[in-house]
Image (cartoon, rainbow, N blue to C red):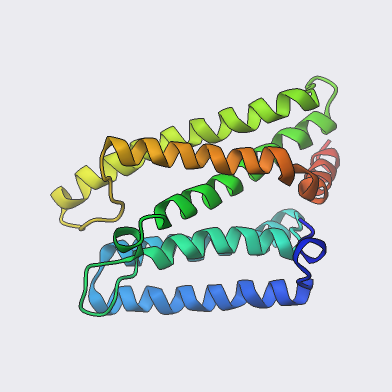
Length: 218
C-alpha cells in the first residue's frame, strides 16, 4: 500500500506511527492488569500479538510487508483495543460512549480481512494455472470472504459474551443485540467494498511477495 503517495507520509514516519501504537498497546495492557480488567487485558494482548505478525512472517517465511500495510494492520487492532479502555474509575469506554466507534473499528478491521483474503487468493491465482480468478469475480470474492468472516466473528462474540461471565472471566467481547450485529455486518461490508474498489492496487507488492514465496516452495 503506497501510503506515501496518497497521504504524503514517508515509510519512516509510517514505521514510527506503528511503533508508537505498539508502545501504547503495551501501556494499555498494563492498565488492564492494574485494573484487573479481563476485557482490556485480552483485547490489548491479542492486538499486541497481531502487531508482531509482520516481523514474524518476514523472519520465518520471508514474507515482507511494506510500512504502509504494517501501519494499516496496526491501526486496526490499536483502535479496537483503545476502544475497550475506559476512563480511570469508570466502566465507560469508547464503544459505549461514542456511537460510531464500533462502526469505525468494524469497517477498518474488515478492510484488513479483505486485504488478506484478496492477496492470498490472487497469489494462488498467479502461482498455478489450476486456479483462475477473473478480475470481475474478485470483487464478489472479497465481499463474500469478509461477510463469511464477519458472521463467524459475530458467532464467536456471542459465544464469548455468554460463556465469559459463567467462567468468571468477565466480559471480553460484548454483544449488544441483533441490531448491533446487523450494523456490524453492514460496516464489514463497507470495509470490504472500499478494499475491493480502491485498495487492491495497493496490495500488488504483497501479492508479488506471496506468489514468489509459493513459487519458491515448488
